[in-house]
Amino acid sequence: MELIMNKLKSVFAPLNKMPRVALIVIALFVSLGTFAPWLAPQDPSVQNLLEAGEGPSVAHWLGTDHLGRDTLSRLIIAANTSLVSVGSVLIIAMTTGIAMGTVAGYRRGWVDDLLMRIVDVGLSIPSLITALAVIGIVGPGYWTMVLALALAWWPMSGRISRAVAVSIMSKPHIEALRVLGASPWRIYFGHLLPGTIGAVMVYATADAGTAALAVATLSFLGLGIQPPTPEWGQMLVDALPYLESDPRQVILPGLALTAAVIGFNTLGESIALNRIPKPLTRRTLATRRLEVAGWAKENADAR
Image (tube, rainbow, N blue to C red; front, side, top):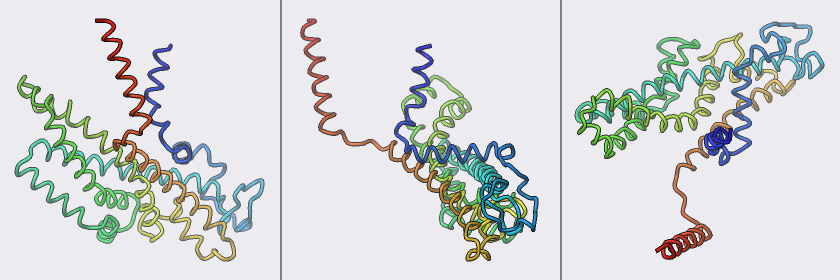
């Protein structure tokens, strides 16, 4: 039992250095997005014009929108929509970027040059411009938006994957595996790919907030998720005509989107900063000197 508790502590130890508020916001967002169909108190698509624009009440905790739909239910379902959209974008982008980056870092030579020039072209164009261009050619829609954002997002994953892959391939244990006759497939899938995925996952955590904002932006422009599917950006554009008469309809989805973006950005920044070695403080140096002195004295006494 003690061994299990120690293992759990080691797994969750990195969370102690993370901002608690950001963790709570992200946990709430993920929980709402995962269990939204069971948490929503009412059907978010049912309209009742007799209750349009009503304020908070027992039947509607956050009131209703201009069509009489329950605002709380729409916000919860919108969390599910955003979670699935962002997850799909990052999974497709990471898979593509990791595949190209690791192949480039493993093969090097002309394969590396060719793949990295493709990545450079993708990085030279702003991600939102790329997404708008793809949607303009194919047409608006949910999966068109997901594929367009994934196409705009994958080059950075490819660049990071290539850098990590080159670093791993220069390690002594990789050279030892080659000398021992390990197959290229074993080196790639057993050592190179697992080591690269972790670094890209850190980047994806930091980029989830930007992806959520991009999904909301495209939906706000009418190029992403289409009505009547609830989505925070789409809820904002629907409520704009009622900004003066009922600002609650604009404030609530805006707050939800802002909290999710800030939570992911704060968590990603914290993870990135924790991976940077920090200079030792004077107290830490003094403590370590005392430890070394005590260790040297024990060895001297033992002799």
